[in-house]
Length: 168
Image (spheres, rainbow, N blue to C red):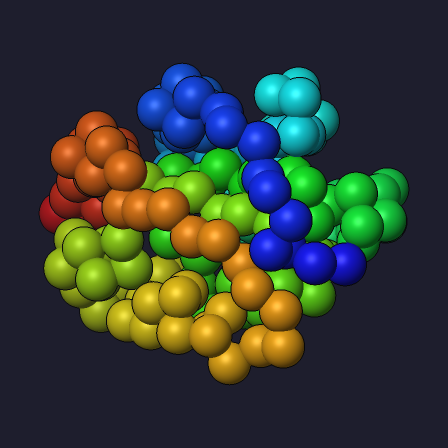
C-alpha cells in the first residue's frame, strides 16, 4: 500500500465539479452541502456520497467519512491507493483520518477548511476545525497526495447560501 506509486492523470476540475453536484443534491434535500466521489485509476466514478447529517443529526455523517467507510468495506487498501477522493470541501481531521486509514492515494478538494470556518462561523452544526488535511497526512507513515483548494469560489457558493440561511 504505497501512495507514492504513480497516480493517474485525471481531469480534476471535471471530478471536483461532480462533487459539487453531489453537494448540491444534499443541499436540495435540506442537508449540509457536502459531497464526495471516489474515482478509480481509470477515471470511473466508483461511489458518490452526500452529507449524512440528516435525518438523525449524525455529527460524524460527513460525506467523506461515510464514503470512505463504504470504500474500505468494498475495496482493498492496495486498490484504494490508486484511487482519488474528490470532495467539495477539505476533509476535516476525522475525514482525513478515514482517508488515511482506508488507504486512498490522493485527495482533491474544493473549499478549504479555513474558508469553511469563515463561512460557518461558530455554528453548532459545523464546529469547523481549522486544521489542514495536509497536516494530518504529514503525521502518517505513508504519503497521501493532496490537491486543493480547487475551484474554491464555486465550492464556497453552496456554503454561502446554506449557512447564511442557517444564521438568519
